[in-house]
Image (cartoon, rainbow, N blue to C red; front, top):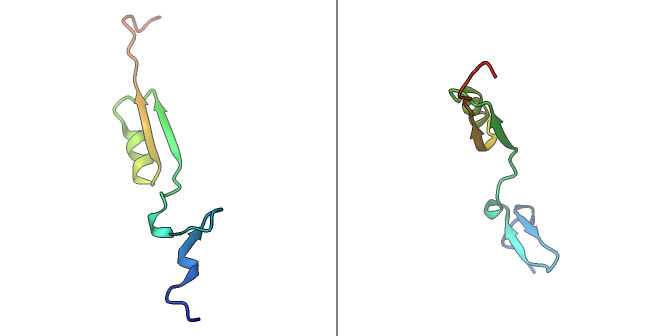
Length: 65
C-alpha cells in the first residue's frame, strides 16, 4: 500500500482521526496589559507575536490618592 501524503504533516488524535497540522490553532502566549496608558507595551507584545486579550487603564479622580 502506498501512502499519498506525508504522515508528519498530520496530527492523530486519541480516536485515530488524522487532522492536518495547518488546521490546528496556533499555540501563542497570551498576555493582559495592566496600566496600559498609551498602549506601547501592548503594541510591542502584539508585534512580537503575543496575543493581548485585554488592556486596562484606570484613572483616579484625585491623582494624589
